[in-house]
Image (cartoon, rainbow, N blue to C red; front, top):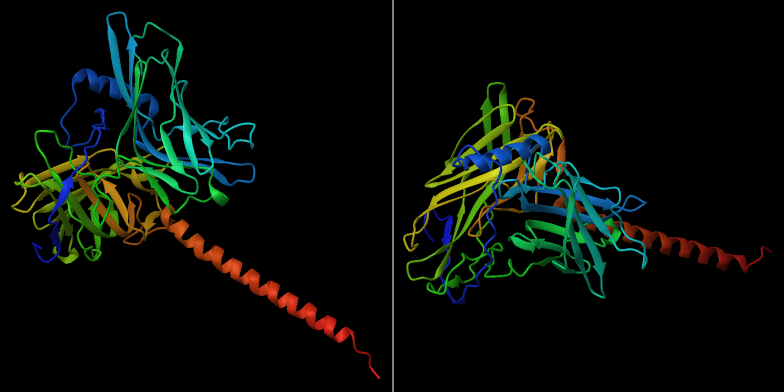
Length: 456
């Protein structure tokens, strides 16, 4: 253990670390700290943004049955890469499934053996992505993925020589056990003719029992590499020339203390946050093995800075030689704020091959709530920065932009907490029903026993 008794490094372990697939690079929404993209790529991204609004990487969608119960839930990041023809040459465009994508009215929970559940997401000028589900004895799967894209959309496909709607499809890509949600942080690429689709940070479930998201989960193979006893992590990708081993499991450190952090702007407090903060980094060591570094932020030793304007805000937290920057954004059309990006920089233990560590992810899209309300989650949340870095937040409550003084607005709870609360309510209701049944049976039995006697 190093640092101030809060940082832990895992000892070396045996066994080779599995490699993970390399996601196809796709441009993320621009952030202040990132280098500018090439001019031609920037023009395409800005053109797409003009049509689709905020091109945020992650969005949540639901399909409900006639009684209002959810039968399909999806929270996922989808990045598209499409090749098309122009007069001069072939062009390739890159774009995300936008946050303002909508669930098509043709989405359905299915009808027994007549039709299967399907989630259809519409976006832009005539584009759609369909996930068709099927179920076997103990598993369900995305049986077919279908993508329709409209080449007459000059915003996404400028100078296209073909003005028609193209359709591509792919077979089963996702499979999970019935009664569990499918979870995959890692990137999964689907290659089709002229189209590449990359899924990441996926939480998905079909055939939901009682309309609630399952607590148990089926993890994808990419996420089930080397893990520790603390949080699931994906080991750093290696090549055959650099043999590595995964870090051995370590004892879990105590949860970090909850600190209060706020940023003040021209109109008063613009970021108000309560949370415990922990950094989790997997890194290669000088002996070519893998190490694990865990750091709990100590609130009274953490410095706070930041800035904000009408549509974005930064919360900068620095503890010892470690800095975490949270970048928030505003979706004006939906009147919601959300975490758009996370940037991490730290100094790893001396055993690390490269002690200086930096990582960023500008398409996180988490901690989302309506402007004027606060987002709250008592459950631990793992924010994936890269394959090597996780930022874990505990007992978080946060509000951005519209804040009345230094007080949180109405609470919007995370899905994990809602599910955790639902279980004891169901158990309590079942017990109350059982007691009522026993009481009614007792009263009926007592009445019948008196009926056999006559008054003299």
